[in-house]
Length: 136
Image 1 (cartoon, helix red, strand yellow):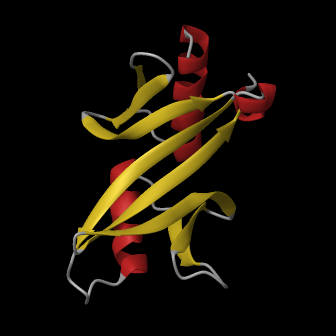
Image 2: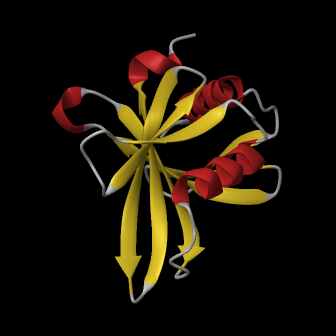
Image 3: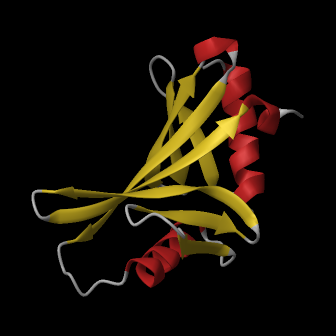
């Protein structure tokens, strides 16, 4: 990831979430960390397979092992608080039980995949960013 791409990703995520405190901080190689304020939310990785450059934001959300946790309201509240945006909403997928969808208003953002490991449940939020999304 070069400096120009990092700047474009930073501007894109700030605009997307309507949050000026979003920051993209480059790491070694083709990765960067995404922060909101001082809170490290997740990692951006570059995917340049097939000659097309795209990026994937990945955020791990731990929800614990309590079976009474209702994922949709819990994840709605969590994502709204983390990105400081009340327009984020999590919805169930019509034919899938292993994942949920995330929207910003009416616009699809990405998918939350369920992961169960050692009795602890977590969700992996994956937000794809295409190179066309970064056009000035």
